[in-house]
Length: 293
Image (cartoon, rainbow, N blue to C red):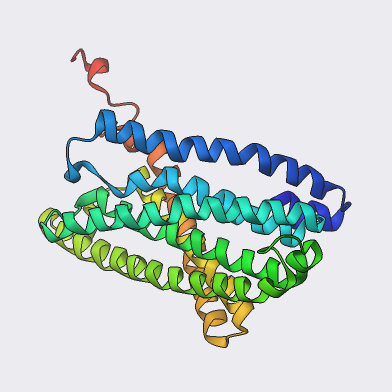
C-alpha cells in the first residue's frame, strides 16, 4: 500500500504495476492464513467455545487487510480499468471471507461474556482486537466503493454486472455497508475501553495502588485495531465531508499516537529493567549469581 500511496505519486506511475504484482502475491498468502489457521485452531487446539479468544480473529484480519490494500492500490496506484476491476472483485471476495466469519466469532465471544467469562488482567487488551476486523472491513468497503464511483466499472463496462449502470448502486451500497461495519466496530471499541478501565480499577484495589500495575507486551495488541478503526473514521470523514467524523478521527489519531508512545516508553523501560523478560529482580540480581537455582 505504501508504494501506491507515496512512490507512485513521487517517482513514477509505473510503480503502480509493482504494487499490483505484490498485491497479487499477498492475496494467496492471506487466503491460506485465513483458511488454514482457523482450521488448525478448531481441529487441534480448541476444546470448546471457552477456548476461543479475540486472538482467533487475527488470521481473518489478513484477508480484510488485503482487501483494504486492493482498494488503496486501485485508488492511488495508477492502474488501468481492467486491472482495477480484477482487484476490486477479488477484494470483495476477501471481505466476504473475513468479515462474516469475524461476526461469527464475535457471537461466540459474546456467549462467553454472557457466561460471566470476562477477560481479566492482561487479557483485557485482547478486547480491542474485536474491533479490528470491523474497522479494517469498513475501510475496505468504503475505499472500494470510492474506487468504483471514480469510474473503473464504467471504463470496463462488460457483462451484466460490471457496467456503468451498476457502478453507482454498488458503490453506494459498499459505502453504506462500510458505515454499518464501522458502527459495529464502535461498539467493540467502546466495550473494550469500558472493560479495560473496569479491570484496571479492580487490579489497582487488589494490588494496593496504581504504581504496582505491570506492563507486558499484550498492551501492543491495542495499537493495530485502534489504527484500522481510526483509518475507517478518516475515510468516512472524507467521503461524507462530515465535520463530526473529521474531528472524531483527529481525536482518535491523537489518542493512537499517545498510546503508541506510551507503549514505546514502557517497552524500553521493561527491557532495561529486565522485567519484560520475566527478570523480576533485574538483570544483575539473579538467583544463579547467588549460588541459587
